[in-house]
Amino acid sequence: MKLQKTFTPRPGDIERSWWLVDATDVPLGRLASEVAQLLRGKHKAKFSAHMDLGDHVIVVNAEKVVVTGTKMDTKTYYRHSGYPGGLTESSFRKMQATFPERIVEKAINGMLPRNRLGRAMGRKLKVYAGPNHPHVGQAPQPYTLTARKVESR
Image 1 (cartoon, rainbow, N blue to C red):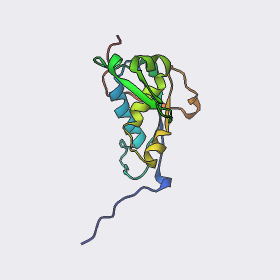
Image 2: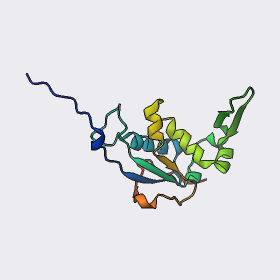
Image 3: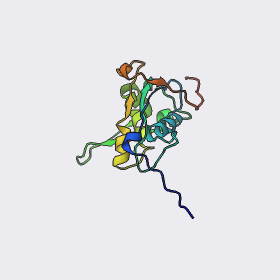
Image 4: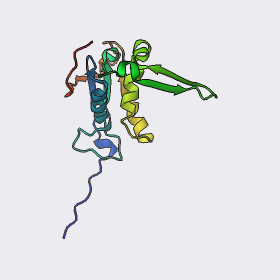
């Protein structure tokens, strides 16, 4: 009986693409789950959980991402300065007005593995608040999300 060998891609077998995702009127969680799959490489036939096979992803119009229900006022983001009493909290509405890129980055990074492999995948993510980005030289392909868009409020 001949045993089937497990295929493990070598670093030379990895082909990385550049994707451009427009976040206009897309729910935050649906955007984050699809972008996280692109960063992990789960859309490829050669996917292997212990290797970084994912692509580079550019997210534009992060300021136009939407949330459903009452999350606009009830969703809070926390960060800590490292000093006693240094906990700061801000609402989704305030974060969207000041740092819209952080909202999308935090949602996507929360769906990646929590180890050095996940950090390497997170470095391939580029998020911009507006429609312009400096990665034109990489010729990113537009990626159409399967998530349905929500009418802006």
